[in-house]
Length: 510
Image (cartoon, rainbow, N blue to C red):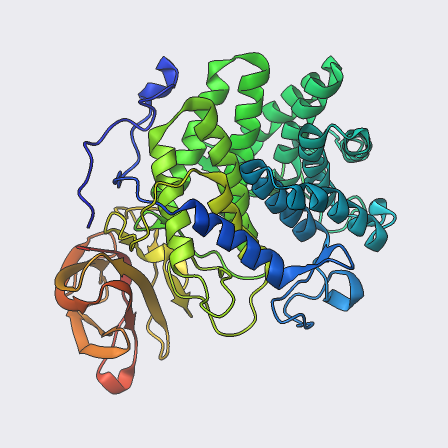
Protein backbone atom coordinates (compact mmCIF):
# COMPACT_ATOMS: atom_id res chain seq x y z
CA UNK A 1 0.00 0.00 0.00
CA UNK A 2 1.10 3.57 -0.58
CA UNK A 3 1.59 5.84 2.38
CA UNK A 4 -1.72 7.62 2.67
CA UNK A 5 -1.82 11.38 2.66
CA UNK A 6 -3.80 13.18 5.28
CA UNK A 7 -7.44 12.77 4.26
CA UNK A 8 -8.89 15.98 2.95
CA UNK A 9 -12.34 16.98 1.77
CA UNK A 10 -13.19 16.01 -1.77
CA UNK A 11 -13.72 19.68 -2.47
CA UNK A 12 -10.88 21.16 -0.45
CA UNK A 13 -9.45 23.09 -3.34
CA UNK A 14 -11.27 25.61 -5.49
CA UNK A 15 -14.81 24.57 -4.59
CA UNK A 16 -17.68 26.66 -3.38
CA UNK A 17 -18.78 26.70 0.23
CA UNK A 18 -21.97 24.84 -0.56
CA UNK A 19 -20.01 22.00 -2.09
CA UNK A 20 -18.06 21.53 1.15
CA UNK A 21 -21.18 20.01 2.69
CA UNK A 22 -20.62 16.82 0.72
CA UNK A 23 -18.57 14.11 2.44
CA UNK A 24 -15.17 13.15 0.99
CA UNK A 25 -14.95 9.98 -1.03
CA UNK A 26 -13.07 7.07 0.46
CA UNK A 27 -9.60 5.82 -0.37
CA UNK A 28 -7.63 9.03 -0.85
CA UNK A 29 -4.07 7.96 -1.73
CA UNK A 30 -0.87 9.55 -2.89
CA UNK A 31 -1.01 10.62 -6.53
CA UNK A 32 1.13 8.13 -8.43
CA UNK A 33 1.00 8.27 -12.16
CA UNK A 34 2.87 7.78 -15.42
CA UNK A 35 5.35 9.55 -17.67
CA UNK A 36 4.78 11.76 -20.70
CA UNK A 37 6.56 9.10 -22.75
CA UNK A 38 3.96 6.58 -21.57
CA UNK A 39 1.20 8.85 -22.86
CA UNK A 40 2.97 9.14 -26.23
CA UNK A 41 3.39 5.37 -26.41
CA UNK A 42 -0.23 4.68 -25.53
CA UNK A 43 -1.51 7.00 -28.24
CA UNK A 44 0.88 5.90 -30.97
CA UNK A 45 0.12 2.24 -30.18
CA UNK A 46 -3.60 2.94 -30.46
CA UNK A 47 -3.27 4.76 -33.78
CA UNK A 48 -0.84 2.22 -35.25
CA UNK A 49 -3.17 -0.64 -34.39
CA UNK A 50 -6.58 0.78 -35.26
CA UNK A 51 -6.30 3.69 -37.72
CA UNK A 52 -6.69 3.09 -41.45
CA UNK A 53 -5.07 6.18 -42.92
CA UNK A 54 -6.32 5.44 -46.43
CA UNK A 55 -9.95 5.22 -45.30
CA UNK A 56 -9.43 7.92 -42.66
CA UNK A 57 -11.35 5.70 -40.30
CA UNK A 58 -10.78 3.40 -37.31
CA UNK A 59 -11.09 -0.36 -37.42
CA UNK A 60 -13.49 -1.99 -34.97
CA UNK A 61 -11.02 -4.65 -33.84
CA UNK A 62 -7.28 -4.89 -33.35
CA UNK A 63 -6.99 -7.84 -35.77
CA UNK A 64 -8.80 -5.89 -38.54
CA UNK A 65 -11.32 -8.71 -38.87
CA UNK A 66 -15.10 -8.68 -38.57
CA UNK A 67 -16.47 -10.34 -35.43
CA UNK A 68 -20.18 -10.89 -34.89
CA UNK A 69 -19.84 -9.72 -31.30
CA UNK A 70 -19.94 -6.15 -32.61
CA UNK A 71 -20.35 -5.70 -36.36
CA UNK A 72 -22.66 -2.73 -36.86
CA UNK A 73 -20.29 -0.28 -38.53
CA UNK A 74 -19.36 0.31 -42.19
CA UNK A 75 -18.05 -2.46 -44.45
CA UNK A 76 -20.02 -5.08 -42.56
CA UNK A 77 -18.52 -4.09 -39.24
CA UNK A 78 -14.88 -3.86 -40.33
CA UNK A 79 -14.90 -0.22 -39.24
CA UNK A 80 -16.34 1.28 -36.08
CA UNK A 81 -19.97 2.28 -35.88
CA UNK A 82 -21.50 5.70 -35.40
CA UNK A 83 -20.97 6.55 -31.74
CA UNK A 84 -17.68 4.68 -31.42
CA UNK A 85 -16.14 6.79 -34.18
CA UNK A 86 -17.27 9.97 -32.41
CA UNK A 87 -15.52 8.84 -29.22
CA UNK A 88 -12.38 7.80 -31.09
CA UNK A 89 -12.38 11.17 -32.87
CA UNK A 90 -12.34 12.77 -29.43
CA UNK A 91 -9.43 10.53 -28.42
CA UNK A 92 -7.46 12.15 -31.23
CA UNK A 93 -8.54 15.55 -29.90
CA UNK A 94 -7.37 14.48 -26.44
CA UNK A 95 -3.95 13.74 -27.93
CA UNK A 96 -3.82 16.95 -29.95
CA UNK A 97 -4.66 19.11 -26.96
CA UNK A 98 -1.92 17.43 -24.92
CA UNK A 99 0.79 17.49 -27.59
CA UNK A 100 -0.08 20.13 -30.19
CA UNK A 101 1.13 17.60 -32.77
CA UNK A 102 0.45 18.48 -36.40
CA UNK A 103 -0.21 14.77 -37.03
CA UNK A 104 -3.17 14.76 -34.68
CA UNK A 105 -4.35 18.13 -35.97
CA UNK A 106 -4.50 16.70 -39.49
CA UNK A 107 -6.28 13.61 -38.21
CA UNK A 108 -9.06 15.75 -36.71
CA UNK A 109 -10.04 16.92 -40.19
CA UNK A 110 -9.33 13.60 -41.87
CA UNK A 111 -11.49 11.53 -39.52
CA UNK A 112 -14.41 13.89 -39.99
CA UNK A 113 -14.06 13.59 -43.77
CA UNK A 114 -13.67 9.81 -43.57
CA UNK A 115 -16.80 9.54 -41.48
CA UNK A 116 -18.81 11.55 -44.00
CA UNK A 117 -17.71 9.19 -46.76
CA UNK A 118 -19.00 6.21 -44.79
CA UNK A 119 -22.12 8.03 -43.55
CA UNK A 120 -23.04 10.63 -46.21
CA UNK A 121 -26.46 11.17 -44.61
CA UNK A 122 -26.16 11.12 -40.82
CA UNK A 123 -29.92 11.46 -40.42
CA UNK A 124 -30.43 7.89 -41.61
CA UNK A 125 -29.40 6.95 -38.08
CA UNK A 126 -32.53 6.84 -35.90
CA UNK A 127 -30.67 7.02 -32.59
CA UNK A 128 -30.61 10.53 -31.17
CA UNK A 129 -27.82 9.67 -28.73
CA UNK A 130 -25.57 8.68 -31.66
CA UNK A 131 -26.28 11.97 -33.39
CA UNK A 132 -25.73 13.80 -30.12
CA UNK A 133 -22.25 12.37 -29.63
CA UNK A 134 -21.32 13.72 -33.05
CA UNK A 135 -22.86 17.11 -32.30
CA UNK A 136 -20.81 17.36 -29.11
CA UNK A 137 -17.61 16.17 -30.80
CA UNK A 138 -18.15 18.63 -33.67
CA UNK A 139 -18.38 21.51 -31.21
CA UNK A 140 -15.16 20.39 -29.57
CA UNK A 141 -13.51 20.23 -33.00
CA UNK A 142 -14.80 23.74 -33.71
CA UNK A 143 -13.35 25.05 -30.45
CA UNK A 144 -9.98 23.51 -31.33
CA UNK A 145 -9.80 24.44 -35.01
CA UNK A 146 -12.16 27.35 -35.57
CA UNK A 147 -13.50 25.57 -38.66
CA UNK A 148 -17.07 26.77 -39.26
CA UNK A 149 -18.13 23.46 -40.83
CA UNK A 150 -17.90 21.77 -37.45
CA UNK A 151 -20.05 24.39 -35.75
CA UNK A 152 -22.59 24.30 -38.56
CA UNK A 153 -22.85 20.51 -38.42
CA UNK A 154 -23.29 20.63 -34.64
CA UNK A 155 -26.01 23.25 -34.95
CA UNK A 156 -27.85 21.20 -37.57
CA UNK A 157 -27.68 18.03 -35.49
CA UNK A 158 -28.77 19.87 -32.36
CA UNK A 159 -31.89 21.18 -34.09
CA UNK A 160 -32.76 17.75 -35.47
CA UNK A 161 -32.40 16.09 -32.08
CA UNK A 162 -34.25 18.87 -30.26
CA UNK A 163 -37.26 18.30 -32.52
CA UNK A 164 -37.80 15.02 -30.64
CA UNK A 165 -38.47 16.78 -27.34
CA UNK A 166 -42.05 16.46 -26.17
CA UNK A 167 -44.12 16.48 -22.98
CA UNK A 168 -44.23 12.71 -22.45
CA UNK A 169 -42.81 11.93 -18.98
CA UNK A 170 -42.83 15.66 -18.34
CA UNK A 171 -40.32 16.46 -21.07
CA UNK A 172 -37.10 15.07 -22.47
CA UNK A 173 -35.81 13.98 -25.87
CA UNK A 174 -36.64 10.53 -27.17
CA UNK A 175 -33.77 8.05 -27.56
CA UNK A 176 -34.97 6.94 -31.02
CA UNK A 177 -36.78 8.95 -33.65
CA UNK A 178 -38.63 6.04 -35.29
CA UNK A 179 -40.82 5.25 -32.27
CA UNK A 180 -39.27 1.86 -31.51
CA UNK A 181 -37.68 1.20 -28.09
CA UNK A 182 -39.51 4.23 -26.65
CA UNK A 183 -37.48 5.67 -23.82
CA UNK A 184 -35.87 8.94 -22.78
CA UNK A 185 -32.40 8.52 -21.38
CA UNK A 186 -29.45 10.32 -19.85
CA UNK A 187 -27.18 9.44 -22.78
CA UNK A 188 -29.37 11.43 -25.18
CA UNK A 189 -30.31 14.40 -23.04
CA UNK A 190 -27.20 15.23 -20.98
CA UNK A 191 -24.75 15.55 -23.92
CA UNK A 192 -27.26 17.87 -25.59
CA UNK A 193 -26.91 20.25 -22.64
CA UNK A 194 -23.15 20.44 -23.12
CA UNK A 195 -23.61 20.97 -26.86
CA UNK A 196 -26.19 23.70 -26.25
CA UNK A 197 -23.83 25.63 -23.98
CA UNK A 198 -21.00 25.31 -26.49
CA UNK A 199 -23.31 26.57 -29.26
CA UNK A 200 -24.46 29.46 -27.08
CA UNK A 201 -20.83 30.40 -26.44
CA UNK A 202 -19.98 30.14 -30.15
CA UNK A 203 -22.98 32.02 -31.53
CA UNK A 204 -24.19 34.26 -28.72
CA UNK A 205 -27.70 32.87 -29.23
CA UNK A 206 -29.33 32.82 -25.78
CA UNK A 207 -31.98 30.38 -26.99
CA UNK A 208 -29.42 27.61 -26.61
CA UNK A 209 -29.01 28.45 -22.93
CA UNK A 210 -32.79 28.45 -22.45
CA UNK A 211 -33.02 24.99 -24.00
CA UNK A 212 -30.08 23.78 -21.90
CA UNK A 213 -31.81 24.96 -18.73
CA UNK A 214 -35.03 23.23 -19.78
CA UNK A 215 -33.23 19.96 -20.46
CA UNK A 216 -31.27 20.14 -17.23
CA UNK A 217 -34.38 20.73 -15.14
CA UNK A 218 -35.95 17.66 -16.72
CA UNK A 219 -33.04 15.23 -16.29
CA UNK A 220 -32.49 16.40 -12.72
CA UNK A 221 -36.15 15.84 -11.82
CA UNK A 222 -36.73 12.55 -13.71
CA UNK A 223 -33.40 10.72 -13.94
CA UNK A 224 -31.50 11.75 -10.80
CA UNK A 225 -32.33 10.40 -7.33
CA UNK A 226 -30.08 11.89 -4.67
CA UNK A 227 -26.54 10.88 -5.62
CA UNK A 228 -27.73 8.26 -8.12
CA UNK A 229 -27.91 9.02 -11.84
CA UNK A 230 -30.35 6.64 -13.50
CA UNK A 231 -30.34 5.42 -17.07
CA UNK A 232 -33.76 6.11 -18.56
CA UNK A 233 -37.51 6.36 -18.19
CA UNK A 234 -39.90 4.20 -20.20
CA UNK A 235 -43.39 2.72 -20.18
CA UNK A 236 -46.93 4.04 -20.03
CA UNK A 237 -48.34 6.97 -18.11
CA UNK A 238 -45.75 8.91 -16.14
CA UNK A 239 -43.20 6.20 -16.93
CA UNK A 240 -40.95 3.90 -14.95
CA UNK A 241 -37.38 4.92 -14.18
CA UNK A 242 -34.79 2.23 -14.94
CA UNK A 243 -31.92 2.64 -12.51
CA UNK A 244 -29.03 0.94 -14.31
CA UNK A 245 -25.63 2.22 -13.20
CA UNK A 246 -23.26 3.17 -16.03
CA UNK A 247 -20.25 5.43 -15.58
CA UNK A 248 -21.04 7.42 -18.71
CA UNK A 249 -24.39 8.49 -17.28
CA UNK A 250 -22.57 10.01 -14.32
CA UNK A 251 -19.99 11.47 -16.67
CA UNK A 252 -22.50 13.14 -18.97
CA UNK A 253 -24.57 14.41 -16.05
CA UNK A 254 -21.57 15.94 -14.30
CA UNK A 255 -20.43 17.39 -17.63
CA UNK A 256 -23.86 18.95 -18.15
CA UNK A 257 -23.87 20.29 -14.60
CA UNK A 258 -20.41 21.81 -15.04
CA UNK A 259 -21.47 23.42 -18.33
CA UNK A 260 -24.53 24.94 -16.66
CA UNK A 261 -22.42 26.25 -13.78
CA UNK A 262 -19.95 27.85 -16.16
CA UNK A 263 -22.77 29.38 -18.22
CA UNK A 264 -24.78 30.74 -15.29
CA UNK A 265 -22.51 30.93 -12.25
CA UNK A 266 -25.15 29.07 -10.21
CA UNK A 267 -23.38 27.07 -7.50
CA UNK A 268 -25.99 24.32 -7.21
CA UNK A 269 -24.94 22.97 -10.60
CA UNK A 270 -21.41 22.52 -9.30
CA UNK A 271 -22.74 20.65 -6.28
CA UNK A 272 -24.53 18.29 -8.68
CA UNK A 273 -21.33 17.73 -10.66
CA UNK A 274 -19.30 16.87 -7.57
CA UNK A 275 -22.02 14.57 -6.24
CA UNK A 276 -22.06 12.56 -9.48
CA UNK A 277 -18.27 12.34 -9.50
CA UNK A 278 -18.17 11.15 -5.89
CA UNK A 279 -20.70 8.39 -6.57
CA UNK A 280 -18.52 6.79 -9.23
CA UNK A 281 -15.28 7.19 -7.30
CA UNK A 282 -16.83 5.72 -4.16
CA UNK A 283 -19.16 3.09 -5.61
CA UNK A 284 -18.09 2.11 -9.13
CA UNK A 285 -14.45 1.28 -8.50
CA UNK A 286 -12.42 -1.71 -7.39
CA UNK A 287 -9.83 -0.53 -4.86
CA UNK A 288 -9.92 3.00 -6.37
CA UNK A 289 -9.69 1.81 -10.00
CA UNK A 290 -12.66 2.17 -12.34
CA UNK A 291 -14.54 -1.11 -12.60
CA UNK A 292 -14.87 -3.32 -15.65
CA UNK A 293 -18.30 -2.69 -17.21
CA UNK A 294 -18.25 -5.22 -20.03
CA UNK A 295 -17.43 -5.37 -23.74
CA UNK A 296 -18.77 -3.74 -26.92
CA UNK A 297 -20.19 -0.31 -25.98
CA UNK A 298 -19.38 -0.64 -22.28
CA UNK A 299 -15.61 0.11 -22.30
CA UNK A 300 -16.42 3.51 -23.79
CA UNK A 301 -18.48 4.45 -20.74
CA UNK A 302 -15.50 5.15 -18.50
CA UNK A 303 -13.85 7.14 -21.30
CA UNK A 304 -16.82 9.51 -21.27
CA UNK A 305 -16.65 9.68 -17.47
CA UNK A 306 -12.93 10.48 -17.27
CA UNK A 307 -13.16 13.17 -19.98
CA UNK A 308 -15.84 15.00 -18.05
CA UNK A 309 -14.24 14.40 -14.65
CA UNK A 310 -11.04 15.89 -16.04
CA UNK A 311 -12.93 19.02 -17.08
CA UNK A 312 -14.31 19.27 -13.55
CA UNK A 313 -10.77 18.82 -12.21
CA UNK A 314 -9.47 21.64 -14.38
CA UNK A 315 -12.36 23.94 -13.50
CA UNK A 316 -12.11 23.43 -9.73
CA UNK A 317 -8.44 22.57 -9.21
CA UNK A 318 -9.54 19.54 -7.21
CA UNK A 319 -6.48 17.55 -6.09
CA UNK A 320 -8.50 14.42 -5.31
CA UNK A 321 -9.72 14.19 -8.89
CA UNK A 322 -6.17 14.55 -10.17
CA UNK A 323 -5.07 11.76 -7.85
CA UNK A 324 -7.88 9.49 -8.98
CA UNK A 325 -7.29 10.11 -12.68
CA UNK A 326 -3.54 9.64 -12.42
CA UNK A 327 -3.86 6.36 -10.56
CA UNK A 328 -6.33 5.07 -13.14
CA UNK A 329 -4.09 6.18 -16.00
CA UNK A 330 -1.16 4.29 -14.51
CA UNK A 331 -3.32 1.25 -13.80
CA UNK A 332 -4.45 1.17 -17.43
CA UNK A 333 -0.95 1.61 -18.85
CA UNK A 334 0.55 -0.99 -16.51
CA UNK A 335 -1.77 -3.63 -17.98
CA UNK A 336 -1.23 -2.82 -21.67
CA UNK A 337 -0.47 -5.68 -24.03
CA UNK A 338 3.25 -6.22 -24.56
CA UNK A 339 2.96 -7.23 -28.22
CA UNK A 340 1.38 -4.02 -29.53
CA UNK A 341 1.05 -1.69 -26.54
CA UNK A 342 -2.74 -1.38 -26.62
CA UNK A 343 -4.93 -1.26 -23.52
CA UNK A 344 -7.87 -3.58 -22.89
CA UNK A 345 -11.33 -3.05 -21.42
CA UNK A 346 -10.34 -4.03 -17.86
CA UNK A 347 -7.71 -1.63 -16.56
CA UNK A 348 -7.01 -3.74 -13.46
CA UNK A 349 -5.84 -6.91 -15.26
CA UNK A 350 -3.38 -7.79 -18.04
CA UNK A 351 -4.74 -7.34 -21.56
CA UNK A 352 -5.99 -10.48 -23.30
CA UNK A 353 -4.10 -12.18 -26.14
CA UNK A 354 -7.03 -12.15 -28.59
CA UNK A 355 -8.56 -9.25 -30.47
CA UNK A 356 -9.32 -6.05 -28.55
CA UNK A 357 -12.04 -3.62 -29.56
CA UNK A 358 -11.06 -0.11 -30.56
CA UNK A 359 -13.33 1.67 -28.10
CA UNK A 360 -11.71 -0.22 -25.22
CA UNK A 361 -8.22 0.66 -26.42
CA UNK A 362 -9.26 4.28 -26.98
CA UNK A 363 -10.45 4.64 -23.40
CA UNK A 364 -7.05 3.64 -22.07
CA UNK A 365 -5.23 5.88 -24.53
CA UNK A 366 -7.46 8.84 -23.72
CA UNK A 367 -6.98 8.87 -19.96
CA UNK A 368 -3.22 9.06 -20.46
CA UNK A 369 -3.71 12.11 -22.70
CA UNK A 370 -5.99 13.90 -20.27
CA UNK A 371 -4.00 14.26 -17.06
CA UNK A 372 -0.46 15.44 -16.31
CA UNK A 373 2.15 12.80 -15.55
CA UNK A 374 4.14 12.67 -12.30
CA UNK A 375 6.64 10.06 -13.45
CA UNK A 376 5.64 7.16 -11.20
CA UNK A 377 5.39 3.84 -13.05
CA UNK A 378 4.95 1.19 -10.34
CA UNK A 379 1.92 -0.89 -9.39
CA UNK A 380 -1.27 0.81 -8.20
CA UNK A 381 -2.64 -0.94 -5.11
CA UNK A 382 -5.42 1.54 -4.41
CA UNK A 383 -7.26 1.63 -1.10
CA UNK A 384 -7.58 -2.11 -0.43
CA UNK A 385 -11.39 -2.31 -0.57
CA UNK A 386 -12.96 -4.53 -3.22
CA UNK A 387 -16.75 -4.36 -3.51
CA UNK A 388 -18.00 -7.73 -4.75
CA UNK A 389 -20.61 -6.19 -7.05
CA UNK A 390 -17.81 -4.40 -8.95
CA UNK A 391 -15.62 -7.49 -9.46
CA UNK A 392 -15.69 -9.82 -12.48
CA UNK A 393 -18.82 -11.94 -12.01
CA UNK A 394 -19.48 -15.27 -13.73
CA UNK A 395 -23.05 -16.54 -13.47
CA UNK A 396 -23.81 -14.34 -10.47
CA UNK A 397 -26.15 -11.37 -10.15
CA UNK A 398 -25.99 -8.23 -8.06
CA UNK A 399 -28.70 -7.45 -5.52
CA UNK A 400 -29.46 -4.59 -3.12
CA UNK A 401 -32.69 -5.65 -1.39
CA UNK A 402 -31.22 -6.65 1.99
CA UNK A 403 -30.14 -3.81 4.33
CA UNK A 404 -26.67 -3.29 5.71
CA UNK A 405 -24.54 -3.69 2.58
CA UNK A 406 -21.74 -1.34 1.59
CA UNK A 407 -21.20 0.15 -1.85
CA UNK A 408 -24.00 -0.32 -4.41
CA UNK A 409 -25.09 -3.78 -3.28
CA UNK A 410 -23.77 -7.33 -3.05
CA UNK A 411 -23.58 -10.53 -5.06
CA UNK A 412 -26.75 -12.37 -4.22
CA UNK A 413 -27.78 -15.91 -3.40
CA UNK A 414 -25.47 -17.91 -5.65
CA UNK A 415 -25.23 -21.70 -5.26
CA UNK A 416 -24.57 -23.16 -8.71
CA UNK A 417 -21.49 -24.98 -9.99
CA UNK A 418 -19.01 -22.90 -12.03
CA UNK A 419 -20.31 -19.62 -10.62
CA UNK A 420 -17.49 -17.46 -9.33
CA UNK A 421 -16.24 -13.99 -8.48
CA UNK A 422 -12.77 -12.85 -9.56
CA UNK A 423 -11.11 -9.94 -7.82
CA UNK A 424 -8.20 -8.37 -9.73
CA UNK A 425 -5.71 -7.31 -7.06
CA UNK A 426 -2.58 -5.23 -7.65
CA UNK A 427 0.10 -4.99 -4.97
CA UNK A 428 3.24 -2.91 -4.44
CA UNK A 429 5.21 -5.78 -2.88
CA UNK A 430 5.25 -9.54 -2.43
CA UNK A 431 3.71 -10.46 0.90
CA UNK A 432 1.14 -12.56 2.73
CA UNK A 433 -1.98 -10.58 3.55
CA UNK A 434 -4.98 -11.34 5.74
CA UNK A 435 -8.11 -10.71 3.71
CA UNK A 436 -11.65 -10.45 5.05
CA UNK A 437 -14.82 -11.39 3.20
CA UNK A 438 -17.95 -9.59 4.44
CA UNK A 439 -21.00 -11.76 3.86
CA UNK A 440 -24.50 -12.84 4.83
CA UNK A 441 -25.46 -16.51 5.12
CA UNK A 442 -29.12 -16.44 6.05
CA UNK A 443 -29.84 -20.06 5.08
CA UNK A 444 -27.15 -21.61 7.30
CA UNK A 445 -23.44 -22.31 6.92
CA UNK A 446 -22.13 -21.94 3.38
CA UNK A 447 -18.90 -23.11 1.77
CA UNK A 448 -16.86 -21.72 -1.12
CA UNK A 449 -13.46 -22.47 -2.63
CA UNK A 450 -10.80 -19.76 -2.85
CA UNK A 451 -8.06 -19.62 -5.49
CA UNK A 452 -5.14 -17.20 -5.56
CA UNK A 453 -3.36 -16.81 -8.90
CA UNK A 454 -4.95 -20.06 -10.08
CA UNK A 455 -3.90 -22.15 -7.07
CA UNK A 456 -6.56 -23.47 -4.69
CA UNK A 457 -5.88 -21.99 -1.26
CA UNK A 458 -9.02 -23.35 0.39
CA UNK A 459 -11.28 -26.06 -1.02
CA UNK A 460 -14.16 -25.18 1.27
CA UNK A 461 -13.89 -21.95 3.24
CA UNK A 462 -16.80 -21.93 5.70
CA UNK A 463 -19.03 -18.88 5.98
CA UNK A 464 -20.80 -19.41 9.31
CA UNK A 465 -24.55 -18.79 9.37
CA UNK A 466 -25.55 -15.19 10.10
CA UNK A 467 -29.09 -16.19 11.04
CA UNK A 468 -30.74 -13.83 8.56
CA UNK A 469 -29.97 -12.15 5.26
CA UNK A 470 -29.92 -8.72 6.90
CA UNK A 471 -27.14 -9.73 9.32
CA UNK A 472 -23.53 -9.56 8.17
CA UNK A 473 -20.31 -11.17 9.36
CA UNK A 474 -16.70 -11.60 8.19
CA UNK A 475 -14.41 -14.54 7.59
CA UNK A 476 -10.64 -14.14 7.18
CA UNK A 477 -8.00 -15.96 5.17
CA UNK A 478 -4.24 -15.51 4.75
CA UNK A 479 -3.26 -15.19 1.09
CA UNK A 480 0.18 -14.99 -0.57
CA UNK A 481 0.35 -12.18 -3.12
CA UNK A 482 2.94 -11.17 -5.72
CA UNK A 483 4.18 -7.73 -6.64
CA UNK A 484 1.93 -6.39 -9.39
CA UNK A 485 -1.11 -8.29 -10.63
CA UNK A 486 -2.89 -11.08 -8.72
CA UNK A 487 -6.28 -12.77 -9.01
CA UNK A 488 -8.36 -13.89 -6.05
CA UNK A 489 -11.24 -16.16 -7.06
CA UNK A 490 -14.06 -17.29 -4.81
CA UNK A 491 -16.41 -19.83 -6.34
CA UNK A 492 -18.87 -22.71 -6.03
CA UNK A 493 -18.01 -26.33 -6.76
CA UNK A 494 -19.95 -29.18 -5.14
CA UNK A 495 -17.00 -31.51 -5.80
CA UNK A 496 -15.05 -29.44 -3.27
CA UNK A 497 -17.85 -29.64 -0.71
CA UNK A 498 -19.24 -26.18 -1.45
CA UNK A 499 -22.89 -25.70 -0.52
CA UNK A 500 -25.73 -23.33 0.33
CA UNK A 501 -26.62 -19.78 -0.61
CA UNK A 502 -24.29 -16.86 0.10
CA UNK A 503 -24.46 -13.09 -0.27
CA UNK A 504 -20.98 -11.56 -0.60
CA UNK A 505 -20.60 -7.84 0.13
CA UNK A 506 -16.90 -7.04 -0.18
CA UNK A 507 -13.29 -8.11 0.31
CA UNK A 508 -10.92 -5.98 2.41
CA UNK A 509 -7.48 -6.15 4.01
CA UNK A 510 -5.36 -5.33 0.97
